Image 1 (cartoon, rainbow, N blue to C red):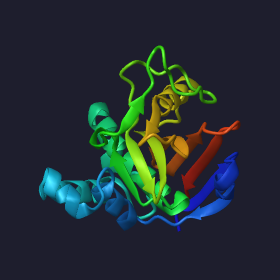
Image 2: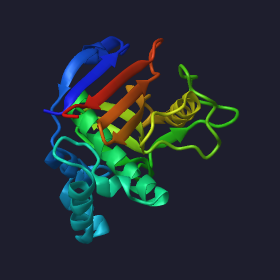
Image 3: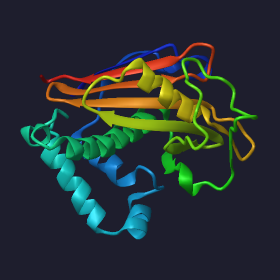
Image 4: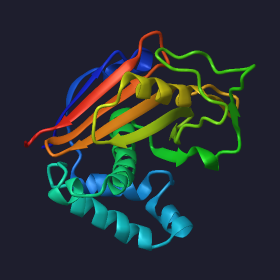
Length: 223
């Protein structure tokens, strides 16, 4: 078993996320998320971006994460630019796992694939979010999550160190930039950070949608 997820300050219908629970993700779970995030299914991703993607992402996960979801020496020996690229992809996979396992969000689809979205502008911005910096005119989050009639917005960050508060504020600004989907405001707007370390994966998920921010911290044990 990997470790614990510490969740606090979610409100309303999502208050049940609060508390401490075990991380039940396995390396195969993360691989499945790698192959699915951004698309409604692995088959859809296969049709869109080709069969090579399955081999590449699977090999990346086996090479750079051990069974306890700790980074391997191969990951730590990567050049910094390569490490950033791998962290980006694995961060998306952890975000996908968290959305499905903890929020019961079935799909995370790329924002670029949606035609029916309304964005804030300098004169008509989205409602200010707790802790968010003003989004830039071209700022966009990564994903829209689908849970029946609900829509959720996600910005995903994968990295090797904990984010500075300025990075969190910027990510919250990105999720705040999306005003509505099909005329409906998102149920949550989540800025997710997952840090990949030799001691294990560690994450922070911030939802500024309510009066209080929701924060989820996850760490992988077996150190």
